[in-house]
Length: 222
Length: 169
Image (tube, rainbow over all chains, first blue to last red; front, side):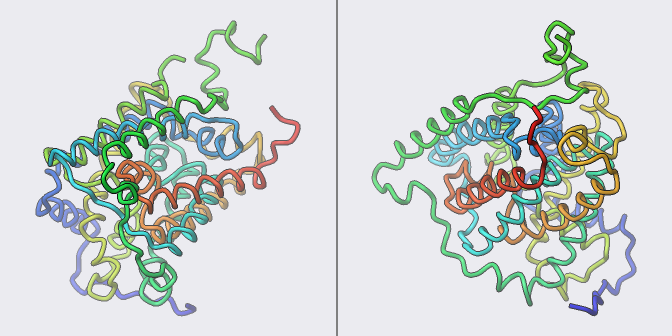
């Protein structure tokens, strides 16, 4: 791995050309118009920002078990979506896009992801939102991520693909309960919603959060 | 608390957005937020897709998520400036100072390192919090449940050993 020489495109394109190419790829896909995809991003970023779950105190705080907003919101999202999606797919309004069970990849990747999420306090979805609100440390994290993506691409065939292992298929929970799929999906969704509500609410607040409260409600000013 | 959505409202809205994205009237796909990273890296470093099979493999997902990313940056910026009024430049989070150290250099080095292994991890697993945890588990996918379990366990273990929380509230 010592000699990092990567092969670049022979056609002389600028980064702007390549970004336009990216947009053009989306135009030729059957996955929504460019405007819709952009709008999905705007709403996604807006919800994350408005719920303030992109804060370091949320994910890193959860890793220290001092903040439970992240798991509460995540589990509620999964519970509600799973029920809605199951019946939408049943009615032909949506399709499954299930990712394969690549056991080694999931476990090794999950460990690396969990460790880095605790340290960075972000994930690839919340990170850009933090950058958009001026967090320079997260921008440095994103640059690290770009190099991670580069290394993954360069050594994919030789190193990472064999490391991931073979796919064990795209099994979903209802496959284990043939004949009672509807009730299985419903029980899963309701249980996950109950977990979301049952997780005790804890918050790690910083000065920026606290300054929005009146003094009478501030534990540190009493 | 003012200027913030409660967690349950965040969950309901996010669920609505996922269903819209899944639906055939929306994008007929999942929301993902980690494939764009190697794809954007390939744009920045001008890598030749003919030479690197991975870029070919992720071309469509990477482009889709790349356009979504532009929306995320825009939506996050607008919301932080006009709604939550939380936009400000900063180098080190408050809780890092409280539970780790005061050093900006330490925070930046750890951020770079964590960002680097985060993307390798996400690409090995084939997804991240959005693609696996939210979109995958909503489809009752076993792959997402394995990933989610491993991530939750390592996240909490890392938090326990990486940060110094003893004697602090």
